[in-house]
Length: 308
Image (cartoon, rainbow, N blue to C red; front, side, top):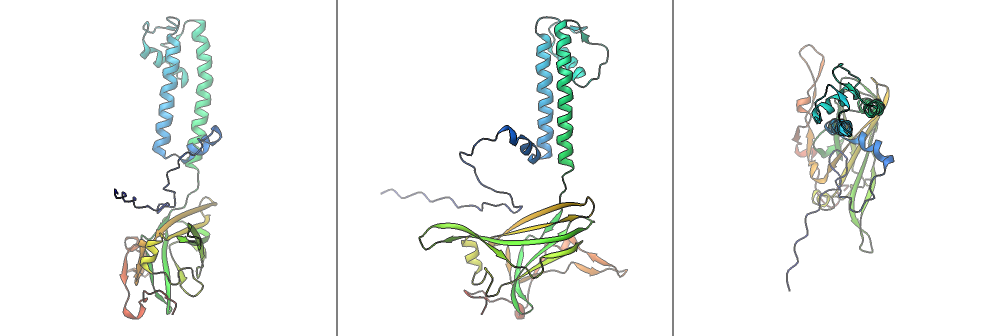
């Protein structure tokens, strides 16, 4: 019998920034009422390219309409699409250099229609760009790796974050969950989510760095999980940070996903807050992602039961 072809390696369904990495097969097409959401979620290059394309196509369409029925534009070359589009651009943007002008009732009608279309297009483009520009966002830095080592004598998961701006995030709140693949008693594979308790999940003034701690005790969903098991069951540590931006006084959020491969066992973060020469504290962002191995006294024994 012919051998079966190997199954492709399954990638994680969530990217590090928290967005989904899934192929949506046979998903119903978006309706027009989702158009605003689609435009808001487009990147800035995508929005600018879309607006430029619509602008060009509208002027091309009106240029062709101006050519319909003969010479409708005064001082334009007969049958010139370039001149017709130039006149369309001047009408669309209400420029009016005085060289071209409508010469027939058809042209006067099209000018009236295009003026209205230009006003609507400008209003929609302005509203879209303002909505994207005015969206409050948080610039939270996440360490590339999470650390697991002894802290206060107990096995502890540690995650480092920092405020990437020079302002404050008031009443910051951190929520951590782990998601992993498990098999039920009936042999069905499914992904389950577990809440992970943090020693301190709130920060009244999130200004610089913040290290989150989770003690791996008998109540922890990580108890008994080895590094190999976390990789095998596709463990995903989903961290969500919310708060109030002190500058724009608006709710902001940021998220990050660590995988089982992102855990640095028996390592700790390098200190980034050190006194400067003038006595003031210095935040070294260039050391933010650095980790170092812990000494033997602070190592976690990797076994099937880390709580013993």
